[in-house]
Length: 286
Ligand code: C2E
Ligand code: MG
Ligand code: MG
Ligand code: MG
Image (cartoon, rainbow, N blue to C red; front, side, top):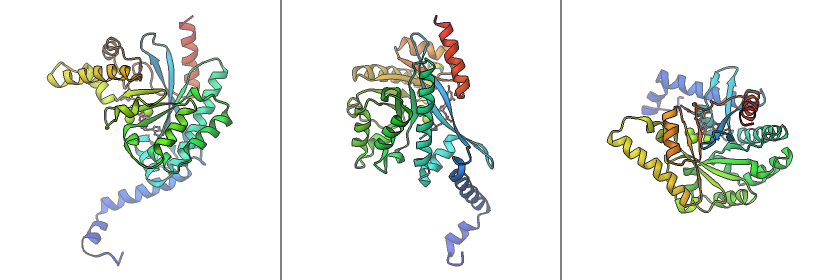
């Protein structure tokens, strides 16, 4: 502290800044132990085929129930994990658990794939393909039951090795979804090279579909429709995320969007609740 002078010293003595900084360090410390303390777990949000409204996929979402900090949103702890390198372990834990759970529901007769979110940082070691393949082998899950959700920004990083890691994973039959599509910058030509890929239209566009028809929302409507048409042309499928009302669902159906996900159909739920949902579905459809 004595080494600091002038501006830096003044900054250091901002009490709120200090509190926030200390809290962040304490949170990182707690996150470091979170897996060992069984504080990280998964919830699952179903994805639905829009024509039949049957479940055609399930997204795994990480949750952290901290003894010290209570419930911490993934919007907070995932960036923290990325910043500190903890994402490698958390990411592998999520992948392992999701594959294990998917295998379990397959054995119960529910033929539904699982999607796992991936951070760009998980590609920096170059080991991701090996990790994914060994987790699949350990869990006994066939590759086509796994989908990885990545963001556009990850694809646009021309870091050495990202491309080849993604291709190697894709070549084994694991599919990819581009999450939060439309919020970043995509090279659509690049997307069309995937063996199997889905565009997940970001909630921010989906949410606006039910807004009054001013100039802005009309443009938003055209944009969503355009993405769906373009995706089809490129051989990609589309899913709309964040669907909260029937009106929006109807618009998306008219636009021929393949799948939907959102609170209207189901919030993220735990494994037991998911099995109940699968079972209800089975009854409804027979
Ligand atoms: P995401 O992958 O885009 O996930 C969608 C988020 O929207 C989830 O928030 C989900 O609970 C929420 N959501 C779903 N339907 C609706 C809806 O109808 N309305 C509203 N308002 N929200 C809806 P969640 O679980 O808090 O996750 C936030 C983000 O954290 C995720 O965004 C993802 O980027 C990240 N994340 C979560 N789990 C993981 C993980 O295991 N690994 C990585 N790398 N990132 C994760
Ligand atoms: Mg996602
Ligand atoms: Mg998303
Ligand atoms: Mg998101």
